[in-house]
Amino acid sequence: MERRDDKKTFSAAVKSLKPKIVDYYIIRKYLGTFLFCLVLIITIAVVFDFTEKIDNFMEKAAPWQAIVFDYYPNFIPYFATLFAPLFVFISVIFFTSRMAANTEIIAILNSGMSFRRMMWPYFLAALAIGLIIFYLTNFIIPEANLKRLDFEDKYYRSRARRSNVDNIHRQAYKNVYVYIESFSPLYQRGRNFTIEKFNDEGKLVSKLSSPTVMWDTTSHKWTAINYVKREISDSGEIITRGDKIDTTLTVEPRDFSRDPSVVSTMTYRELNDYIDLLKLQGSEELKMFLVEKHRRYAGPFSVFILTLIGVSLSSRKIRGGIGMNIGIGLALSFSYILFQQFASQFSLKGNLSPMLAMWIPNLMYLVIALVLYKLAPK
Image (cartoon, rainbow, N blue to C red):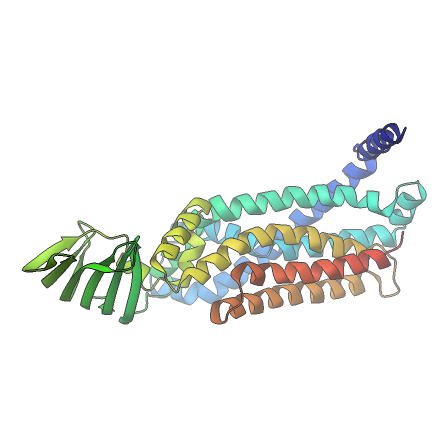
């Protein structure tokens, strides 16, 4: 009997989720308002961006075709996905407040639909937006960012001259370690270069030393000048000297001092592959790429949290009207973005785990969302 009751309860729950006219109405309102806010805010952002950069464009003779067809078509997707959770929040606050002001929420609840059931179409729309954000962020936006940054380097800001990088320690392969005392990105030349190879027991088996190492941009190999190679075994030590020797390593000059913006130009697969390489090398830049990886997961999930907060806040008719709800919503959404930036800096500059740093804002605002949900009218 209990199994039959459970089956009936489950089937009734599934049946209650069957789309209704009011569900299509809410989804249409949600997506329509979201697109309207997106277009409106992006238009304003493009105008402000163009106003700020027009002097640089004119000074560096940027072709108008490149501005119109190369830069802004790649700037718009980047900006849209970066602030999509904020647009979602504003959209939910706006159209739900309008529905509450027009007593549509009361009519929906009086028709027999529970507040929990009314959340279903909101979450369906949020799921669609979240999946689109995840796909764009991981597979489309990186290529757009590459073109956008390349345009900015040519016509907006010049590449800063890169300074020398000191005390470079990397793991090239298993039990193989590379050290360069100082490397000049400008001349692609390093000073006091060593490669040390150990066995599985941790004993040194070979060491190559060179006062100068150069990176060959054509062959993508390192050339050690005036090298000394020591090979150590139980029978003794063999020392070899030479003018130069080429070495193939997993370490490249671009790995020493990457521009922080380069992380946004990597697709999902490229980012994961590069993280594996940085783990192998023991690079200090690993945190920056891990933060980006977890941000790409946490960002789409925040759409659900901000949707729940937005509905819980705006489903009640209050004396201040829509303006009060929008003001509260903006304060919460900007505080969320600010807190997320603080958490990422704590991870990059401190000992906070990148995964924890990116998910702490979501967890904290999830608690806020659940509290507001409990206080929302049922």
